[in-house]
Length: 372
Image: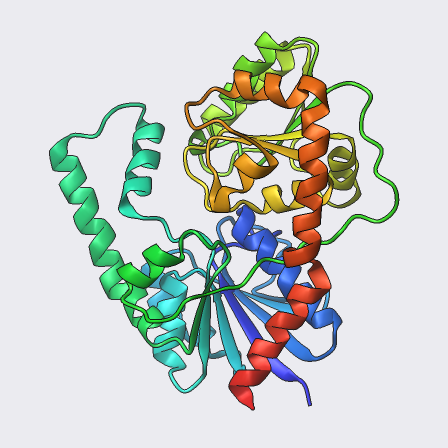
């Protein structure tokens, strides 16, 4: 007899906003559904009005249910949180929807995978990046109060009452345990598909940026780096999700730069093609936990060049630009085929810890342990 699993996530591909949380959830949900060992549902927030999208829709054997973005409308229309009667709720990080679902379904087991549980200092860094200025002490205090109040009201109750808590990144586990006063938090990786067949890299040095063209991601730095390396091809894959004026400006700059190609969002075969050709994945964001793009790139033998260094993966399999010395990092990775050596080592880690079927089966085993 199959079990019923419902994922709770703040975004889902095709339902308005694009980001790592939604993409990862889609990969896990569809992977579990494909095994026919569980009925799979997703409750997600609808960020944009899309006339062709229904409130409840089936996609690739996954039933997707959208709920309003407004907290007031969430409360008024809270019956949506009771449409599904699963055996397990799996929260991909914890948000306002998680709170309402937990309040209305306390009898059902809840588990959490923290994708990006940002400490306050990281929230502050993003805020300053978006506003392009240092925030005053008064603003910091007000932001801190808002940060703590939201978590105390909406996040703490869900976390404290969850049957199991996981993190997709090992190095954030101490923070999660300390902040939420938990005795146990375990590592649960996100699943990554291993590309089939032989991978043939581009003949010319190729650097790929894969992500949102929003302020906190700082894709404008990619253009600056490209100007210093005219012999290197840069591919800018993504579109803005929040900062549209900024994102459009970045695309305009990319079009003026001969060695930069802006290709918008890439998925499926198109993403596979670019990853097969790329030598290096560049990530200029001021804040990341462990982007799914890192794991995808590693599966294709692509070296990493980034400002962040989750689980020390960047320093092991690329160059950690902790001083924003992306140019130096790029030079080092291109020198003596260093990128190729590091890329091969990265792929071995993916095969050992993140391989798709292995991780999907691990999820199913966790669900079964809760309903046995």
